[in-house]
Structure formats: C-alpha cells, structure tokens
Image 1 (tube, rainbow, N blue to C red):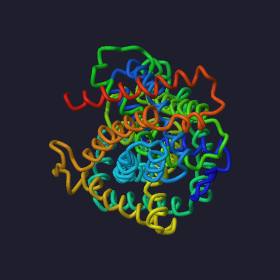
Image 2 (cartoon, helix red, strand yellow):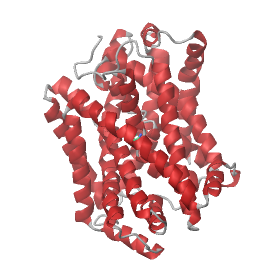
Image 3 (tube, protein in one colour):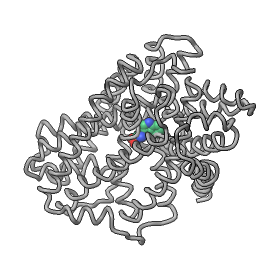
Amino acid sequence: MSESTHGMWSSRLMFILAVAGSAVGLGNIWRFPYVAGENGGGAFVIAYLACIFMVGVPIMIAEIALGRAGRKSPINTMQDLAAQSGAWGGWQVIGWLGAIAGFMILSFYSVIAGWSVAYLFEMASGVFVGADGDFASAQFSGFTGNVWVVVGWHSLFMLLTTFIAARGVGKGLETTVKYLMPALFVLLVLLVFWAAISSGHFVEGMSFLFAFKTDQFSGESMLIAMGQAFFTLSLGMGAIMAYGAYLPKGASIVSSAVTIAVLDTAVALLSGMVIFPIVFAHGLEPSAGPGLMFITLPLAFGQMAGGQLFGTLFFLLVSFAAITSAISMGEPAVAWLVEKVKVSRVTGAIIVGGLAWLLGLGSAFSFNIWSDVTLLPGRSFFDTMDFVSNNVILPLGGFLIGLFAGWFLDQKILAEQLEGTSEIVIKLLRVLMRIIAPVCIFVVFVMTFVG
Ligand code: TRP
C-alpha cells in the first residue's frame, strides 16, 4: 500500500517533527534532569547515550519500517506482516500490548501535563516572586493535594489532546507539531542563554551534567538509563509504528531516526543546561526527584531577575512538549478503532480520550484522596501505572519488536523499507537489531525483576 487510509504526513520533515514531537516531552524536561541528578550526572548521561544509539535507534528504525510496510494501526499491521512472512499470528500481541500501554501512559502523563499547564499560569501570576523553599513546597503540596484542582487540569489537558486527535493526521497532528515544535526549540535556546547569563553557575551546572562521577552510578542506574531511553524515544508500544504508517514512500527511515534521536537527546541535555545552573545558583539539590520541576525550579525562578517571565516561558515550553507527546499515545488505539470497529475518527478519539481520562482519575487521586491506596505492593495507583508501562510493557514491546523485525519478518520487506541505505549501515543495523538490542533489553528486563 502506498498510502494509509488515516492520512499521510505531507513531507519527511513533517514526519520528523511529528516523531520528535512524540519523543520530546515530559521525559526530557521533567524526568531526564532528575534521574540524571539522582544517578551521578555525567556517568548516567554516558550510559543513557549508549542506550539511545545502540538500542533505541535500531528499535525506532524497526518500528518505523514495520509501520510503513503495514500502513495500518499497529495491531493490524502486525497481523498483516506476520501473515505475509508466514510467521505466527500471535505476533499481533505487540499491537495489543502497545495499545494498552498507550492508555496507561496517556492516563498518568495527562495528570503531570495538567500540572505543567497550571504552573504556567501560577508563574505568570507572580506568586513565586521572592518565594522561599517552604512556600514553594507548600504551594506544590497544596496544589496536588486538592483533588478538584488536579482533576480539573487533567480533564482540560485530556480534552485538548482528544480535540487534536479527533481532527486527524493532517489537520490535527501535523498542524500542531508544525507550529509547536519550532516554537519549542526557540524557547529552549532562549532559556539556555538566559540561564547561562543570569545564573552565574553555568559551568557548575555543565560539569554536573558531563563530569564522570561513578560513585552514584549503580547497576540499577543502568536499568534506569535503558528505561529512560525507551520512554524518551516513545518506543516499545507502537506509537512510532503508527506514525511510520503515515510516512511517504521513499523518505529515508535510517536518517530520519538518527535525526530524531539527536533532536531528542539535544532537548534533554539542553533542558539540563537550563535547570542545573539555576538549581546550583540557589544552592538547591539537583537530586530532588520528581519535585525538581515543580518545587525547586519555581523557587529558583522566583529569586532571579526576569524569573517571572522566563519561568512562564519555561512552563509554556513544557506544556508544548507534553501536548505533542500526548497526541501520539492514543494513535495506535484510535487507528485500530477506526479500522476494526469502523467508527469515525472523532468517535475513536473520544472513546480513547475518555477511557484514558477515566483511568487517569486513579493517578490524579494518588496525590490526595487515594494517597494511602496501593495497587502493586508499595506503589500508589500513579506509581503502578508508571512502573508497569515503563518497566514492563515498553521493554517487553521493544524486545518483541526487535525480535520480530530481525528474525521473523520476511527480510525482503525490511530491505524494501531500508532501500537506499548503504550496505555497511545495513550490516551494522542487522547486528544491532537482531542481537545487541534484544539481548540488552532482555538483560535489563530480567535484572529489573531479580532486583
Ligand atoms: N517520549 C515522551 C516523553 O519523553 C513520552 C511518550 C510519548 C511516550 N509517546 C510515548 C512514551 C509512547 C512511551 C510510549 O515524554
């Protein structure tokens, strides 16, 4: 098939912006800096880069190639490709796992994204100007502790996501990334300059991010680096496969995937370059955990010249990053509903958005009325969603995708998708996709469970 029935990206550049939009998200700006901070900075960054380029990029190439070869929702694409390759029909499970993970990730992602939008307004209102640490913490716990407020912002964010998804691939997804992604890069560069000039601690921030400190880097850090690589590139659940289905024929998959990985990594590192210098400038802890972005940063912004403006711009950046990611999470499920249940795109988007919203209530409650409720032992509803999707389904999905594309797919199909790629790159990719990536993922996966 040369076109998808769901629509097509109008160019390779739009595809790159769309996938980069999916990849660049809270994972880069909210999660990466604090996990790097907790795991020794520079040492973690190196492990992370290795995971991105040795495991992430090959799996991304596999996802895009499978998607474009099938031109359907991941569930139906897997079914078709397995049939064409004479492989077991059960490979479809990759599509199903992905659709389920999409719901789970979208549900809790929307809660945090809602906070980011709320903080955009808080920053603009000036409440943090001159604030001290106690005020910033109290502000955050007061905010997350109010169930109506958290549910309200979660609902608003999900409504927006559903609206964009309902408008379809061209008018909805492409239009959104076409404007927001360039804006995001401009805002980020602006913030890096501001942090460099006004914090007075740029060098300290940089050396934290790039200095090789092995003492805080443990075996577990390796697992976290791999998990982060998957999450940040949106891999393992078919989101990229779904986007690949809308990629025009002839556009190079390998160079697109490398470009996207470079962009995504650049945003993570640049975010660190904004965050750490201002954290150090105020003698704050870089390893503050998830509160880094919502407590430490507002506090730091509140104490700096221009902090109200640049703090507002920062949360605007985060909100843009979050919405372009969220719209990719439901795509596998929306596309499947349209294909299989024959609903309209609008109905499909409302069903997916509605169910994810409902599931998200559990995560929203985890910070207030369900703060004592645990789903898995010792994990709140929110933590359970995060853990099961990121540490179980994404690695499992990535592992199966690598295995399928490398060993079970009719290799003529893969070769066709990679046409135009040089021999040596194909050979390297073969080894990475068939052996290195699955083995690495498998080891990490097993280690996560044996502790
Ligand atoms: N990559 C996004 C981030 O870094 C999150 C994301 C979007 C995602 N789509 C995904 C993660 C699909 C896993 C699967 O914030």
